[in-house]
Length: 392
Ligand code: GLA
Image (cartoon, protein in one colour):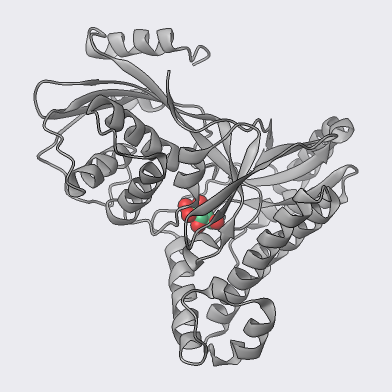
């Protein structure tokens, strides 16, 4: 759909639901993470930013308890009808499990939702790209619910926490808080330096004078529900439990590199030791990277991104051959300051910082190498960093 104006979304709503009486339109963004991967469920730091692409919803309250969901991205599925009386957690992989999970999570917190909803959704995040289409749908649903039912005590941080809670407990994906937080707390032209242990955060302006951020989509579908993601998390927990017997820590991020090297031999399984190493080093890298950015040392930021990729690929084993090829090709290309896989991994996208005068060459060279080595076409998006959720 080309026209994503409020008016057009309302028109689409009318086509599906007959009229648009009482409808409101909302938006919540996707995110790209610049550095700090798989640190959020290890008590560490992350550095994501909200994108200007995301998910839109036209929503209205009904007078009965029905919930109707329709997505313009999955128009062939038609309207999915369900009800507030049918809200059991399920590992259902349909997109409707995300808004349902958020409604369920609000109800579980004691918010009274007595009337159902008609909802029409449209997302502009490429599916399976690892740019957090699910988190944006969760935050979007929260934003709409807060407004429609008048739950005015709900803060944007709450929207993030509720989104993560529903994804963990309704959808069964044991994600951390990063994606929902980035979507709910996004700020135009800023990345968010978040301490996931305390939810303290700081905005850091991304003013790259001569460079831009490019996301490259490998089109290898990253599917996190029921994937290796939960296994990685369990491996980190196993390593933490063993470390706790000898060091006084609450999370892996409580260790610095030296402490880790001193105590790592207590971790029995090789896999768990490697995962923990990544979590510890990645957290420290993230802190160093934000310091470098504050000093205006973008070259140092880029080098840390590159190290972060090696760690994701070798120690966390959460990359894939295709994204490794994209990143390695970027490292060889003139004008690339840093490049790494972004998001949960196992497919999805890379994120690169590229000098403005080299963007065209970047696209040409990476496309060529990707086609030659993988037989696939990569897509490129020059990132514009947007705000958090809003009512249009
Ligand atoms: C996914 C999860 C996040 C985070 C990243 C990896 O996007 O939803 O919570 O763990 O992976 O950094």
